[in-house]
Amino acid sequence: MTTTRPLPRSTPEAEGLDPAAVLRLVRNLDGLDAAHSFMLLRHGKVVAEGWWSPYDAATPQLLFSVSKSFTSLAVGLAIEDGLLSLDDRVLDHLAAEAPAAPSDNLRAMTVRDLLTMSTGNETSTIEAIVPTNLGRPDGDWIRQILAMPVPEKPGSQFRYNTGATYLAGVIVQRLIGRRLLDYLGERVLDPLGFEGATWEQDPDGLDVGGYGLSLRTEDIAKLGQLCLQRGSWNGEQLVPAGWIDAATSRQIATTHDWLEWQQGYGYQFWRSRFGAYRADGAFGQYAIVWPEHEVVLAITAGVRNLQSVQDAVWDGLLPALDPAAAKETGLPHDGARPSSAVLPPDDGVTWDLRLPLPQPLGGPDGTPDGPAGPGDAAGAGMPDTPMLGRTYRMTPNAGDLEELELSAGDDGRLALRFVRRGAEHGFALGVGEWVRQTADLGDGPAEVACAAAWAEPDLLVAHLVSVATPFTTTLTLRFDGDEVTAWMDLNVSFGETHVLDAKGTAI
Image (tube, rainbow, N blue to C red; front, side, top):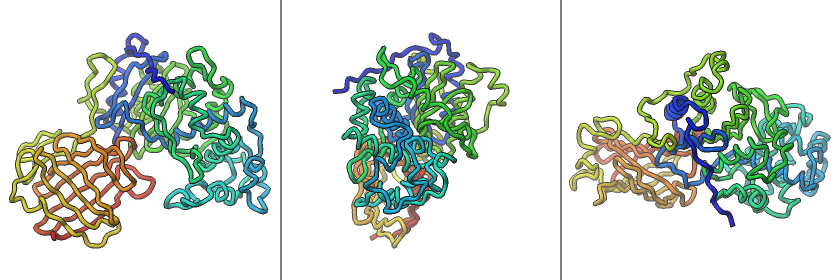
C-alpha cells in the first residue's frame, strides 16, 4: 500500500533563489491563457507552489504525453531486469499481430526506434487507427498499428508517434505479465509516495503508455526530481542512472516551428534550451528539469501555444539563475501577459491563485455595478423573469443538443439542465463562485466546477471546468423572447474548439 510522502518545503531565499524571480515566474504563468498549477523545486525542496482555483493539490490531472516518460522508465527497468534490449526487433515480441507479409522496414523496426519516435511511419499511428475515437472498442490496436505503412527506414527520421510508445508499453507488459501501472507502482511510484495514479487502458486491458496517466502536480514534480537525481531516491537506486542519462539526452534531431521542440528528443523525453530537459504533455503539462541549477518545475495548464509556457518559465527564472543567457536570448518574451495583481504569499511558498470567473453585467473581477442578472443581485432571477424555469426545444444541430432549461435555486445559484443525444445532464452554476460537483459533460461522470454570470441582461455565460483535465467548456446563452441561441466552446481541443451553435424555442 502506498504511503504518501510529501516533498520537503523550504523558501526561495533559503535555497538561494531570488524571490523576485519566483514572483516574475508566477505572474508570467498567471498571464497565460490558463495555467492550472505549478510546483517549483530547488535542491529537492518545494520553494513555490500554487493551484489556480478551482484546480487543487489533491486532484490528479490527466497528463497526456507526460505519460510517455513513465513508459520510458518502465522500458529502462525491463532492460535492467534482462527482459529485452534496445536492439530487439519489434516483431520478435509482437509476431502474432504482424501482417502476413511484413515490409523490410517493419521487420527492421527496433525498440530503440519506438522510443526515439523514428519508426519510419508517416504519421502518429494510434490516432490514425480511427481518427474519431483512437481505435475501435472491439479492435486490435496492435494489429492495426503494425498493418500501417512504414515507408521510411526506421531510425532515420523523427516523427512524433504516440503509437510507437503504445507498442513499447505493450512489449513491456507482455514480458512482465502485468500492467505498467503495477510494475512502475512497485518499483518507482510507491517508493516515491505517489497517490491516486490511474492509467487509461486499451480494449485488451493494457495501459496505453503514450497518454492517459493521471497524477497530482506533486507527483509530476517527483518524476522530475527522480530524474534530476539520476534515478536515486532516499539512497536507493530505483531506476538505473545510465538509463536516466540516456533517456534524457538527445538521441535524435527534431524540427518544429517552436524553439523548444527543436532541441532534440531522447527516449520519450524532450530536450529543452539552456541545458534542461522535460516530460511534456498536450496543452501545457510539464516536468522541466534543469540540472545545472538543481531546479525542477511541474506545470499543468490548458493552453494552445505550448511555447508560451516555456517562454514564461525562462523569462521568470533565467535573469536570476543565468543572467548571461537571459541577455543573449533577448528576454523578456512577448508570449505571456504578466499580472501585477498576483502578490507574493505570506509564507513565501504557497500562492493564492484563481481562474477568472465569468464577468457579470457592468463590472470587472466579479464585482457588478448593477444587478447580476435579470432578477435579484444574486442572479437567481425574479419569479416573473421569462427565461427562467422554461424548457427550450432546440432545432436540429451538429452538437445534438435537444433541450435546455435554466432555473433559479433558493441558494442564489442557477440550475442548468440540458438533454443531449437522449441523455439528461444537470449542473449547479455558482454566481460569483465556483461550485464543485460530480456531473456528466458527455463522457461520463466527472468532477467539475461551474460558475456563471449575466454578461448582459439577456446573455448568460457559464464556465464548466473539468478539474481533472485541462478542459473548460464555455456555454453562452442568448435569450430573446421565446427564443434562445446557444454556443459552446472548448478552451483547448485536439479538434475543433467551437462545438455548438443551436437555436431553440420555449415549449
